[in-house]
Image (cartoon, rainbow, N blue to C red; front, side, top):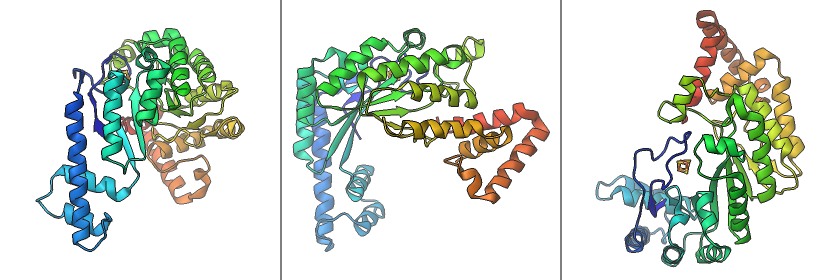
Length: 364
Ligand code: SF4
């Protein structure tokens, strides 16, 4: 991870727990290039250590344990050693919205990164669609050619009244235009969608309009990351006041079914691998896997009430990844069944729901 800007220049989204109360700032090109040079120097040092110990420049277990086992080496050495050890070649640019840099500056940074660190095979960044929209396709192309491969954009929703309510600072039409520009520039685009963001009040419009926006962009990836509302996010206040009502897990399943059902005419890959998502298997390539994804949801919806509850308890506790797991391990199933029964006996169904919510919120 290489930090090229600090925090988020927008910082107003009601559901967002990060960067709150932290001021946004740009880092200078010189400062970032200094960091890149530091990584190069450390990487060279680690490779020299490997040669010295007879490992021919390869950063293996022996080299890594030598670095972790000695107080002489700083955390920076440990980070670079792990990066070389795993050899993914991935570099993630931090923080929330790096396309906000002047194109010439970002191109310079990417050029330094790619020439100084040829070990890098993929560079990814976050951006706001509103920021990407301000760049021309030519600028985005120059950024792509300088070495940026993939962009993650937080679409969250395509429904304008909801985007406004959540202070996302962008409309559905602007997200379409920004997404199309990034794809036209040759960037690999990953759009994050937030199931649950419409609450019980706007879930249907949220599901349908978000899919309609994505149908116009055809991004490479659609990533689902369900809403959670910890006390530290501004949206929590609306929950307390009662003007926003969370979707239950069963309502979320129906919302995602409507969303996937409305995706049409695109070739995106859908992923749902985040632990906050109820149904991880809602993933695959469109259009061929659409029916498979819908079946995962229908299978969950067809479970008897008590089994849906056991699945939710298992999923939120990290024991289950799929409704098929309910059949795979009778011991875990019995344990979860007894846990549900004992909480229900003491605190009723309300207690069971509270317990499940607390488990999910651990991951926020
Ligand atoms: S733009 Fe992204 S990082 Fe910034 S407040 Fe909104 S969700 Fe959070």
